[in-house]
Length: 542
Image 1 (tube, rainbow, N blue to C red):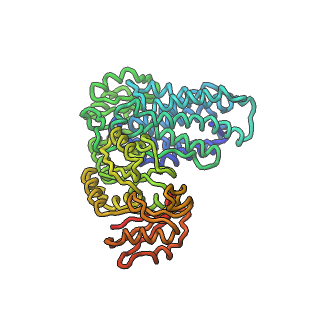
Image 2: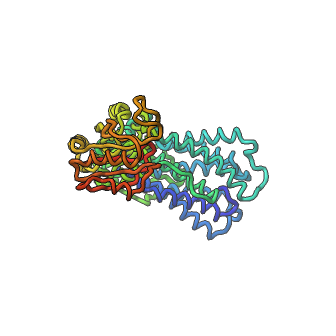
Image 3: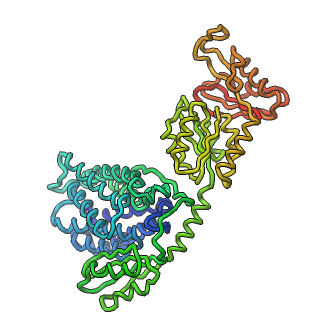
């Protein structure tokens, strides 16, 4: 607890919950392990909400100094335990419990970076100890690596300890500094998760619980600093047509509490594993929280007859949850999307307005294979058509397509204006093969051209550096003054075209009205602002 008042502690928890709530559905949509039931965000939020409710109850009893730190951390840990649901909720409750145990074990110490780092380490140990077969790449890995980073940071701090009380702002900033570095490690761990857990890699996601934990910490940092939370990357939902791990054949996610005396988690594990899997039994001698996936919830609760009172029973039909999640994602994620390589803010907006995802290729329109691969992964679709929009990009795009786990087709668009013509043919409900064929058919009826500034003198003496030069496809057809050159290009492209699309780039020397006046008779001009850096005008004719 960073604050000398219960109210300030509550604000920190409230900020963490608010940040998690803002991305709860995003966390749900990442959930594929151990079961793709899409409730990780819900379960983690329920755990934090239980903590917040308990703090509200405690606040009626006085301030921290009046109640006592021991009672508060014990009450908070028990509230988290009783409010937990599902694997993710129970593990989060154990993180809270571990941190609480560390706080209780150091009476009289002010909450400083050293105590926070120790609490994080104890939380990680408690979480690992609660899981029978810990899986790396999950929330467990994330919290362990965050704790390690926190310990590393305090080792390099000049004064990580608080020997005497300081003002609230100083204390909060000390804690925020350490937590912010821990969060950096958490983000890196989340991204590395698919390398450690094949289930995540196959579904094309990061671990939902690990990501949810980073969101919680971002909220804590925001509260400590009184600022917006540190920015976190957004992740696309799981690919619904890829294999997902299932929890054997068990149907019901069963959660309940047992209260009594002389309770121990160990003896119940094997008995519950005879009824199902994904078993968690956590708590203390007075209260246990049980989580099990089983077909017989009543038999799980009957095991504790005579051992204590069973309460807070929650049974969820995982088959129904998985079906609802799959249906929701199928509606949210289109079958096929487009990734277009672009340059210029206006060009980005043009492609996005037509439903394409875009990758900034820079002034030279030349992204790397791995930038293209990352762009393909970010497209919220099961299959992707890539528009390289430059001959220089095609080879890298084809290599990225080979490396991707998605079904990817590369269309040999040689210019951005050709790519714009092609993307109009996108039908998201069709597969990549069908969309690619439609786009290639469209390109058969499109001619392109452009006008730019000559970068050097012509060796044949036709133009000098700085003059305008005009192209049809990739053939030089005109040079000289900008208006004259553009007029020739438009005239050539407009001979048999019904529509000419002209896209203005940075530094174009003519106004739009002057460009429109150059259109050949009988051709309609559609004028847009692309902001591309290398071409004054890009033109396509259909």
